[in-house]
Amino acid sequence: MELCTTIQAIRQARAALGTVGFVPTMGFLHEGHLSLVRQARAENDAVIVSIFVNPIQFGSAEDLSTYPRALERDVALLQQEGVACVFAPDVAELYPEGFVTQMSLGGVAAALEGTSRPGHFAGVAMVLTKLFNIIQPQRAYFGQKDAQQCAVVRRLVEDVNSPVEIITAPTWREADGLAGSSRNSRLTEEDRKRAPALYRALCHARDCVRAGEHRRTVLEAAMRSVLEAEGLTDIDYAMIVNPETFHTEGEIIPPHALALLAVRVGAVRLIDNMPLL
Ligand SMILES: Nc1ncnc2c1ncn2[C@@H]1O[C@H](COP(=O)(O)OP(=O)(O)OP(=O)(O)O)[C@@H](O)[C@H]1O
Ligand SMILES: CC(C)(CO)[C@@H](O)C(=O)[O-]
Ligand code: BAL
Image (cartoon, rainbow, N blue to C red; front, side, top):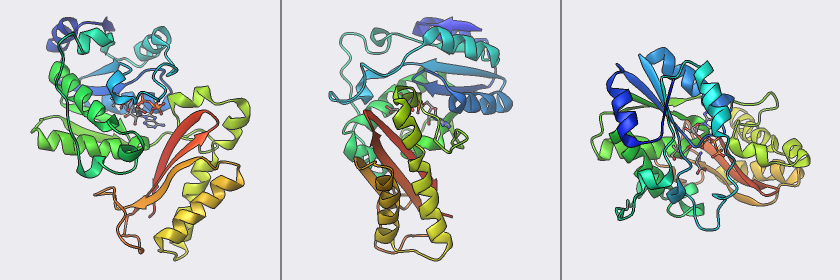
């Protein structure tokens, strides 16, 4: 496995590979990331993983400085998974002096994470545009855990006529339902016990829909009450949206509606989602 830190090195390494499945990450890898890598391996000649904590997708008050990092451990894990190349540039490699271009996104990027984290998706879209241009993969793999990000990326490649095929892979969960996330490592022992309430709240909404409840405000309140019973009251959003638009549409939820949560568990902001089938 090759570890590349420059654009020139990864371009050269990529040129020797056939079809490439690309898994963009911010590192501190867990089973969720590895599930994307395994799917990419099964569907392509070779896999490239990027590890880059992209500063421009973090707001000034967000957790960029405390975002967990473990490059050596990540590289060892990826080697075991049969990854061909890891691209781990530093910030100046992707954003050299003189870099000025910005992106502006609307539509699916506007609500939820777009409202809570202004500029976040513009930063995600910029770094992915760069990474897709540098690596030129056939396919790129994203986790359903970041459902809105998946929709934003699908829109991005369509809007800029990128040939990269976007694949969404299922959310990997711990045995108690907690969605795998690098940020879980920052939960205290007590908060780790409370965190599966996000999953339970989503399951509760899904069960209510299966029992015939289709009123959005009732379902959103039901999710909040599961969270609050666990002492999780710092709720950024608990919403049910149309998965095509990521906006709420009236009181009766559409078929295949998506429930999404962003909740602070202690000092850590976690997100999760579930289709309400
Ligand atoms: N539990 C998971 N199951 C499947 N894919 C996941 C999971 N967690 C993250 N991913 C995906 O891995 C890719 C890289 O995500 P990232 O490096 O931000 O990890 P993360 O664990 O989501 O970090 P954080 O939650 O702290 O933002 C994204 O496409 C993301 O959706
Ligand atoms: C896609 C991504 C690697 C872009 O920085 C990031 O948003 C993430 O890890 O989900
Ligand atoms: N997994 C999404 C990246 C972020 O939280 O910035």
